[in-house]
Length: 201
Image (cartoon, rainbow, N blue to C red; front, side, top):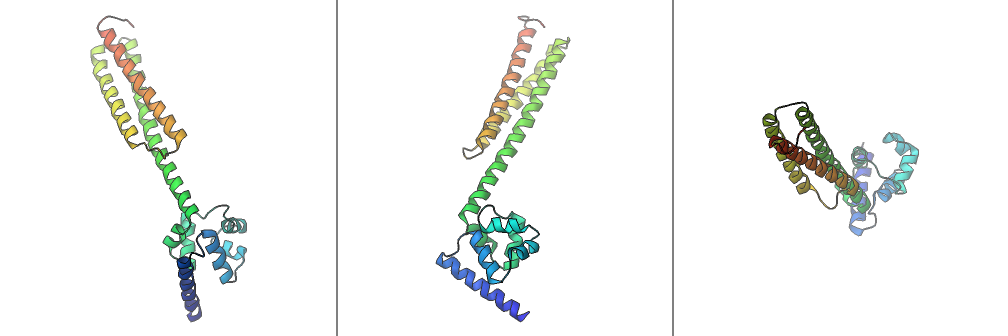
């Protein structure tokens, strides 16, 4: 136990000194240095972190990066600051930032898509009801509420959009939402014209 504690202390000190000197700045180099310092093979490291030897090789050659839970396990095992591991690697930080942006874009896209789809369904139901002899004086107020909800949804959607978000998802969600707003407005106009006798179902 004493030897292990002493080794951990040495590793910590040398890691800090390397950080200050700028010698090791990426996760790949840190992992390789710590493995060699302990005299471990890639297979042994793979077994410790429940991954394949090829995965460890990919880490050390910057072909991919450990996921966050594995990175936490690496930090605990080698007794290296998680903050140092993550912030010391510009590529890894960029990867995490990209994933965060993509996740935020997907969330906004899903919210807008689901809500926009619901408004479309309600508008179609209103239209079918009117076509089958439904009372327009009851349908128009409901459709007006749907239009207000669509406008509110568009305001929320475009307020939360950011340029750095994934363009395909951002564009698809925006187009779909605008289409939903157009349909809801069109249905409202048709109902109003029908109520005034200008058109007939």
